[in-house]
Length: 281
Image 1 (cartoon, helix red, strand yellow):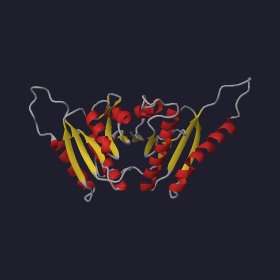
Image 2 (cartoon, helix red, strand yellow):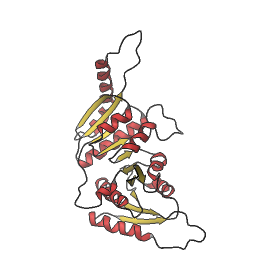
Image 3 (cartoon, one colour):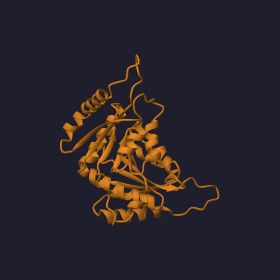
Image 4 (cartoon, one colour):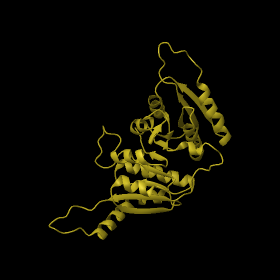
């Protein structure tokens, strides 16, 4: 997805959700011509804990991955350490990290609690979080082919997200929906803003920002949407039936020490489809 042969890395823990993530990771690796590395984190052993060979979890996932694509180059690794720490370190040399999520008591459980959130915040490469990933464990369930939604606000992080979204859409042969949310400005001198004119200006700015990417990916059909509303609800609504939502780690007015913006976090918390975070070092 980014650099030459940097692998797609997928975290596994033996759960159906992590196996569903493996299926998405296989698909990403094949589409972008990358090797696949399947990684399992054992956690930190206690002083009296007996050593056990849990590399079998990664090996079993590799067997399933080879069933989905025989020609894919696959390696496995098992490490002591927390899943978040292990995968963040692995992301230093990866093109993409994939993790699955599942619903637990009304909340998303990302492998081990907040692993997905920590990856989205601190990884050194893009992160794909596959919500309800257990849906994709069976070969009888094809991966979706709906349009890809990308949030664009004109910031540098969203520019990187737009590039990733175009790449994903091109390899999958699907439409791209580029969304920019806008809100009605405060009244001045007692006059209401011309909302039709404002919407047109936002649409034109979005079109100008995407023009270089459309020139680079001329075969990708693009739908530009300037939508009135708050960014997170707008993106969740636009992405409700999408293949995935692609976002930058933060938008305009982000701070260097706050690496995950509130909009991105809200979308991660409430999305039911895969979310690709355009994170990079």
